[in-house]
Structure formats: C-alpha cells, structure tokens
Image 1 (cartoon, rainbow, N blue to C red):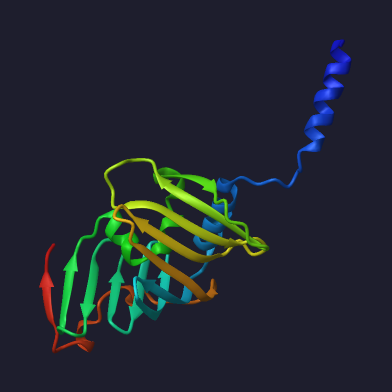
Image 2 (cartoon, rainbow, N blue to C red; image 1 turned 60 degrees about the vertical axis):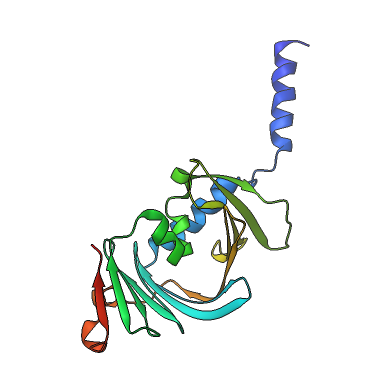
Length: 204
C-alpha cells in the first residue's frame, strides 16, 4: 500500500471514531467546572450509611460550605471547621485535613479529582447517566473508591457512593441542586450567638 492510500485508510479509521466520544476525565471535568463556576450552590440530599438514612442540606461557595442534617451541623470557612452535635450540646472546632473535609462534603471530591484520583467508567450502564469510578492515586488513605453518577445532559452530579478500605459504603443522593444561590460570608462560620448553651471544644 503506498503512502497516499495509507493516509486515506487512517483518515477513514479516524472518522469512524465518534466525534462526541468523551472520556471519564472529560465528564468529571465538565461537572467540576459547572460547580466551580456557580455563584453559590444550594443542595438538598439523602444520606445513607449502613441501616441509617437521613436528609440534609448543603450550602457552598468555592471550598466553603455549611452542611445540616437532623443530627448535626457543620460549618467550614475554608480553613476551620465547626462540628455541632445537638445531642451533647457541644461544638468541636478544628483544622481539618483533606480527607476530613471530604467525609463531610462528598461533592468536594470533584474539586481535585484529577490530582488525587484515577478515573474510569463504571461497568454499570444507566440511560441518560454517566457513571464514573475514582480510585486513589496514593495508598494509605481511608477511601477505596468513589462512584459518581453524572447527568448526561446537564453534567451535574446526582449520586456519590464512597467505599472505605473496610468496605463501608456511604450513599449521597442529590434531590435538588441550584447553582445560582447567594450566600453571605457568615453562612460558613459558626454562629456562636445562636448556640449560647453549647460548649465549644477548641482542638486547633
């Protein structure tokens, strides 16, 4: 086969590959870009771990967030985290590491997924959804894998399944998600005046 015919054959093969084919990285990058570009995020979700299930809400802007469930509330201003426990009337203040932030807010996995995780498509197939798996690049952490379901049209995350090294699974299912919410800076700091009867345990 001469050079001209070879080039034609290569061109035919390239044209046979769908132009719209997207990698798992492309899918998550689009989802991350949507969240990063949001003015402010407001989300309601269902959280399930073991036999326990609860509903909650999340407000976030950049890497700051406020997460509330019936059993606890957490504020994170990008540096400090306040974890409030109404059953003990105590609030713990500390400087979290990356894994501690992710344990509270699974959506944060999208912010640095390419740096900390390898991505690949799951073998699961659901019409209208992209299901992507994340596996840690480094060993020694608590997370074995994360499964993220992304809407194929909006590229917004719909579900997170976090599997730990001891095979515990936590499921976060997004029930509603807004990207144009407005949150004052005070949203992400502990409102001590509203919890005067609570003891603050400072672990910084």
